[in-house]
Image 1 (cartoon, rainbow, N blue to C red):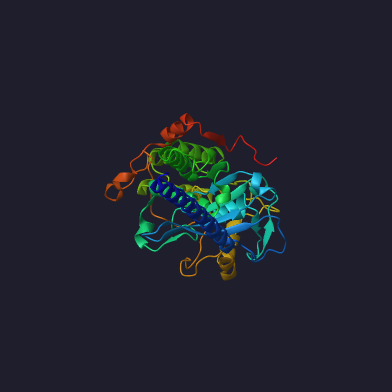
Image 2 (cartoon, rainbow, N blue to C red):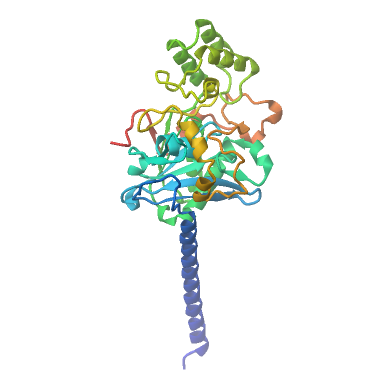
Length: 407
């Protein structure tokens, strides 16, 4: 006679397994439904000043990267214009530190929507990188653009280490919101101070994937242009360019090298700062990033500010327009624009700015910070060592000066 207890136990086991699998399927389905619902909430439907139709979807909103402090980063994502399901995902970061990837990356450089001089309407950039990739613009660190924190002290403690950590958290959560991109080939690109952001975030991704024994983010490579990599050599190059172009005098050139070569780009000494003021006066109203074209007459004192903020201000436009930055400040401060991009009114800055001063701690050996304000956890590798680690890990590096993404 068969043992009925064995049969009952076996039936109970299979019933439990069936229930467990069913529950797992329900949880996955519920998670997918939540992701789709959130995507619908983030989808941008009517962009003010857009008088033309586009054949791609775009989304904007926030991702909370720290629940305790209420730290949230703002993004604007554009699907590829054609066949987005087959195209890679690319994250774009602008520098500063403190400059908006929406203001520069999207609205002036590689994004699909550029702003007309009236500050109210947009036109389609035919050279947008979303012709070949799905592009994600991130405003980072917290305090930049529409990104915010409910804890005011967060704005006083930005730095390379936390920026990389927050950006990694952002990506992991964003991929949960957009799970269709989870296994997609992923690239990171940027300019200026993103010479820090890009390799440091790449390294954080590599370490995370190794720690989790997987590829949560399918990082394939990274690219930086006009990158701030090493303060000493960057100073040498900048001052030599200014001098060789006849923008500054021989005496100023010599003193800049004496007083500033060993200074941080984002933490000047008073002596170096005074020499930068002298250089600014000698250059006059000249855009140091485009010395042979007119400067924006709306900002005759821009030179000094540009010297001290390493973002790139070259523009792609229907015709050359040196005032695109000003157009962005008008456009993104419009209440109807902020509403269409799902900017939270209670979190929006009183005045949105293309670049906002943020107190920032860098981790390079040449970053001269006051000892009393330097957090101990910001002592880390130089960027050359970071690049070396990434090379050894077979993460591809693309030089922006030698690659053509748009053909």
